[in-house]
Image (cartoon, rainbow, N blue to C red):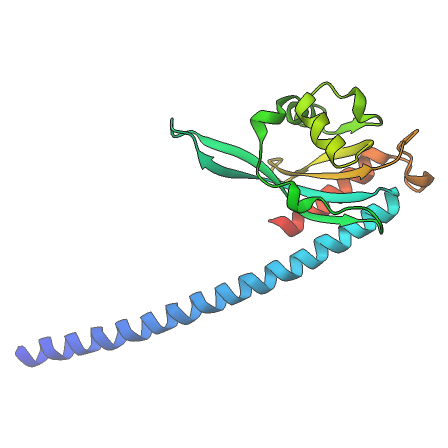
Length: 197
């Protein structure tokens, strides 16, 4: 009986060791693969933004992603959004590093309008009634912008795709290359969404 217990303990020990090694290798592979996948996705997003910037003639094309921030003393989480990808035209300042951790509560009118209407468009930022949002745009030299939400396949909004102009815009016609501008922007947002998730 004692020998059987010893044999069972040895088998369990060997099997446990083999399973542990397998799981460690699998986790290491997934970690490495995750970084590689993230890098490839990032390259694709930058290519998509470069295409969008060229097609629209905008000064900047960018992606903002929604995320959780710190917590208030009440325990409620701070909902935030940050610029995670940006492509700029030559001679235009990159603003992504200055567009991090914006609290959604500070830009309620802008976010609510974007969600309710499925876009946020302004040909003259001086006329925007959300003072915090207007101030942010003016500080970046923005004169006009066109934003659409980035959604998952189940319609959950995870970010914002946008283009900004640093000179006046009469109409958003994107040089006449795209007849349905709303549809063009939504297609671009859907494409980028596939790389974000």
